[in-house]
Length: 424
Ligand code: GLC
Image 1 (cartoon, helix red, strand yellow):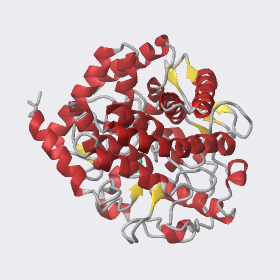
Image 2 (cartoon, rainbow, N blue to C red):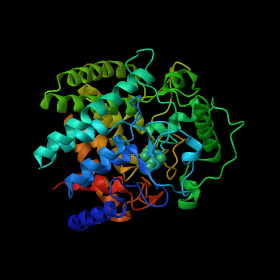
Image 3 (tube, rainbow, N blue to C red):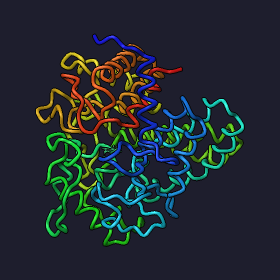
């Protein structure tokens, strides 16, 4: 076991975030991701709260200043032009005043907001800034239900793998096969200039990513059309659980600030969502699975998306089963939690979301498991996370068998999670 110098790690984490700070927003890491990413920013705000509370609020405010009129909060905001990333604003063509992408990302904002609201020492600022953000986050949640659950199933679908935040997960292989690759405008990837191509999605996956972008663009990014027009519509348990948790957390802030209507709406949706989530449980896998909404069936892929529901108020028996899945992984791997079941032959140790461990998913799952009383597993995850950092630095993700750093380096949200794990 690597010995851990906590004070040193903390100082390095703060330096990492400061190094990616562009004033009113942070980039995930310089080079590979030169813009503002949605859920990176919300989780990075939690890191800022440990050393600069005002800056923590600003991070989320900047993101929501770029919310669309229909309520969607885009997955990327292209504040300053850079040709170091593909696809850039000229591919998306969303027509926003500050260019943005046209799809969204896991809605951790409500969750992060409550954490900030309850933790910061400047209580006046907390009340004022949370109150201003409250209706915006609520509008985003409403947008999900209107645009991504038109059939009123209680769960929302993602229309692009990038929305999940788990870009190349094995979860998408089957539904993604339905997405054509013909007719995609020729392009040059930039991600493989910054990271090892063996750690990144394949060319075939990129063609399909781009086909969907061009398809949605041809529909004028009209969210009243995209859901039904997309050949890719997947109900991801992790994504939905994050939405449910954020609805509960937003409701708690709304109650504290006397915004009863927002509180009730979000509580109701969370309750409905929790009930509907049960339909994604697989007894055979001992975890949740994605549902292919086009094919109308569960996807046989035991990924971390099916463990993330620990973050929502699922039944104690479900949380216990998720803890067991993680303990099983621990028998094969040194560093939990793998982004895909290591017992599955499709597991790839170094390829992005097809195997490696990520600190943000460790954080979200550990938070839920600790709240459910599964403290031994939660503690194990925190210890594994800090060991990864001490050994391999603030990487994008890690090989769960060797602890090797993968993808990009100096990552903002990895650093923020370290500050969260270390506490004050
Ligand atoms: C990748 C990740 C996504 C993240 C983004 C920026 O696309 O899959 O979750 O938000 O990088 O770090």
